[in-house]
Length: 317
Image 1 (cartoon, rainbow, N blue to C red):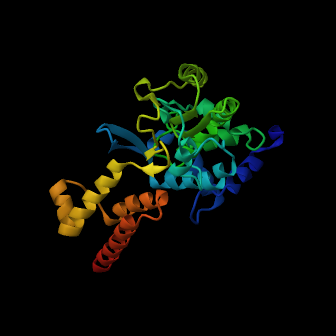
Image 2 (image 1 turned 180 degrees about the vertical axis):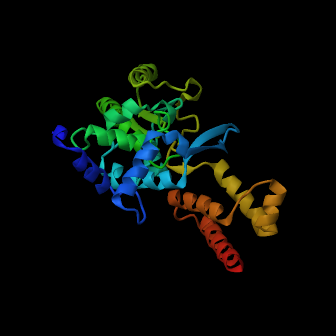
Image 3 (image 1 turned 135 degrees about the vertical axis):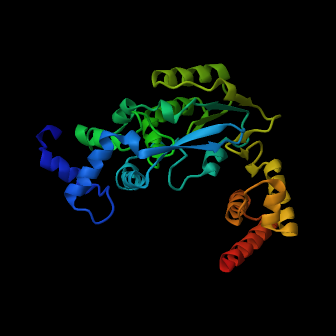
């Protein structure tokens, strides 16, 4: 039916998404959108961040004008599209707890990781993921040009996480149903796939790998893990052997930080350890523990102390 839309109707369609913030008139808004979409690679800068394993991850960060457009695409367009119930990351209202809790007290846990996840999501895959019944082809192309870098999904753009869930929707639903019929629990947190239950590991791994191969993905062989009850079964940072809890190592690190901060102060703690901790970041870590264990009196005291320090520090500034 979209063939009956003329150029003026398509312009109205684009403007209805309210993608450009500010007081520009309609022609200025359209000019900006088409200027960026014609050469999107000019509107990003590269940034490296350290990974937990000591390596580096390269991000492609959009310039402020494009970033705001992408946020508008995310909130005004993409979040109106449903993702699979097996997708946990980047879904409002869902958290690491939702990803880990279904896997508590299981005989086998299989953890798989998709290699170079975002950079292997192509423009073609994204185009196929946006429903034809909602978007005319020309609008799909424009929206996706505003969200891609050299025709793949850039890690660092606010639209990339939700778009990745849309691309993975058919995979999640198929694998999720395949697992459900075999009493296997499945969740996906971005590029981390977790399966638990009592099953044949190689058979399931091959099933998943074959489907991913068709989609242009591959597994990171170094990150494949099979965890059994006599081992620490860790799912996205949470231990799930008998019940859901934060690892002892994570709690120990927070206790050490709190000890030195209470004794020497935050600035001296950072100077001695070479860290760049902030009260806000430490509150985040403590709050994370309390989401898992809300009755932990020790960490409630940490929370109270850190908030007091943060408020005092803010007033002094």
